[in-house]
Image 1 (cartoon, rainbow, N blue to C red):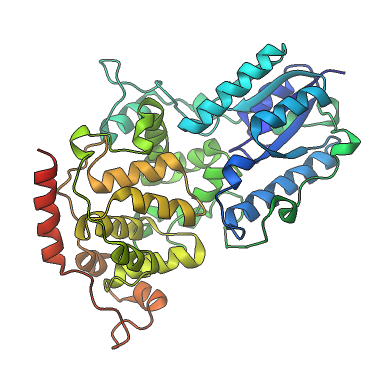
Image 2 (cartoon, helix red, strand yellow; image 1 turned 90 degrees about the horizontal axis):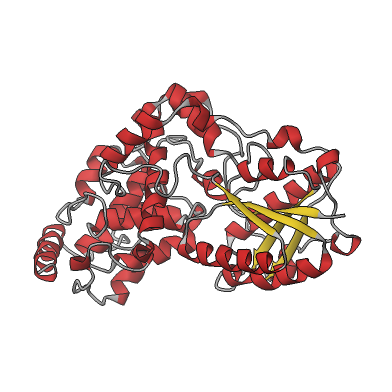
Length: 436
């Protein structure tokens, strides 16, 4: 019997899943598939908490699929090699999946589609992790917007209730529509099989945030000591354990500020799709040859939260300990690195990539380039966040700092790496010279 594979990537759920719904309505029995991509796993440390999170949710999906009368196939290897083997092991009619907009993912999907078409197997990809993708939001001149305010205004003006409607994948996920893996595929890779060990870090449940958190989001989101001050849904959006449509429906009803912040995800994915080179270099050509300082000891101090700036240090220590960093602390820590220390933003971006549970290439690159002033969006290079004034405004009682930097105010606390005024003046001068 011919079957359809549904290839899970950034959509670890059966509910409101665009590509899965389409696959279940296509006719052939559907077998969910997850591939532990060897190329992605290779550089990760053996205790990477994201692997524990992913493995937990893949196993949850396998259980749900079994309860529904089907199953889930999980394999480990290089993606193209895995599909070459699947073409031998199963009689495939089609492969369905959801779109991914990162440069490496686009190249991977193009190669997979070419392989499948060569074997008369269809390949279908659907928009699922954003409301508007690619070139669906454009300026009047037909170009991608580079100013977020204009993008958000257009985004909200053209959004209709239909854009947030749930896909019927959960309703269709029944025995009549499902296939089972071969008996030889009944065992799925364990973390140990993959070369990893369990490393649990806290994430909120994969369910919409409490109404009270959403209601007060605009008042609490910038104060890192408040718990919960934000929804903490970013990790679930990153891995698709919750539907972006479900969360945006809630935001549309209850908090316009939260909706606007979620629109940034669409914006940054749109920019990365149009300008894939920004993953590895500044969007602005004038910013590609800035005289960044080579200061490994200072960079290491920043990574470890030993800069002598308590708001920066609190954020970096929280990141290292939990894999999470509140938005305001992210901004301050990033600005301090690439402005006061004048260290290349790409080093900070890579460090966040190693540590953040919710790491998302488009969001991370977009925000780092926004802070550095090197990106497509209208954030001036001369905007420099002062960590002391930020602390006075967003952590006035030092509650956040006292939690993460308990030695602050004692002789044991690190001396500042740089005088803030000196660092600011140096950055402005180097930017002026480097942009010429």
